[in-house]
Image 1 (cartoon, rainbow, N blue to C red):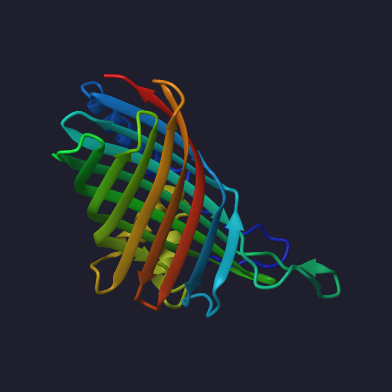
Image 2: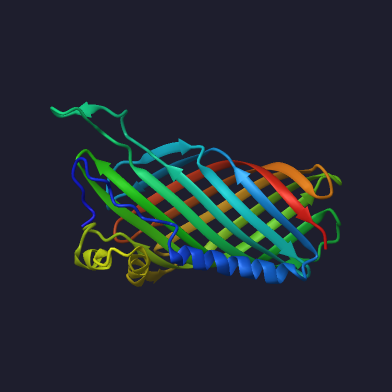
Length: 289
C-alpha cells in the first residue's frame, strides 16, 4: 500500500521509466523523419513561472494551489504543405494549506503536497489559404499524453495519487506577422475523447494494491492505464490556450514570450478540477529549408 509512516521515504513515481522513453523516442523519430522534407523547422525552449490550483475530492475537499519556477517546455515545429509539432512539458508544484509547523514530542514537521505534471503532444494540421500574406491559419488534430503524479502528505501519513488522460482532439493556430521581425501567435487545443486512468475512490483498493504489487514502475504504469476508461466531454472537460509573441534576432534565432492556460475537469469517481497558468520566456532556433 502507498502509505508511509514517519521517517520512511514516501513512494515515488518515476518519469524516467521505459514508457516515457519509448513515447519520447517515437516523437523524436516522427519529428526527424518529417523534418527531412520540411520547408521550415524550429526548436523552442521555454522556461518560466506558473501557478497551479487543484481540487481532487478523492483525496481532499480543499483547493491546493502553489506557484513555481519549475516549468519547462520543448517544442519542435515543422511544415511544408502541412504543419506539425511535437511538444514536451514539465511542471512541479508543492502546495501547502498553512505554513509548515512542528508537532509532536519529537518536533516532526509538516510537509507540503507535491504535484508533478508531464505532457507529451503531437499535432498534425493543414495550413489554410488566406489572401493576406501576413496571416496564417492552421487547423488539425492532435494526440496528447498527460500524466500527473500527486503525493498528499498528512502529517505521519501520506497517499500517492495519479491522473492520466490520453487524449485525441482538435487544435488550431493563428499567426499574425506584425512586420518582418515581429509575430503574434494564438493556439487552441481541445481534447475530445480521452482514455482516463485515475486513482480509485478508496485510494488503496484491491485493484490498486494488485497494480503496485510487482514494485516495477514499468508494469505498474501500464497496470494503471489498464484500469482506465474511455471518456468524452460529458465526463471530462479539457482546454488549453496559448498566446505568444516572437521577435526575430536573426534568420536563425528568435526570442519571445508565451502565456499558456490549461483547464481540466473530471467527473468520476469524484470531482476533480484544476487551473494552470504559465508565463514562459522562449528562445527558438530556426532552420531553413
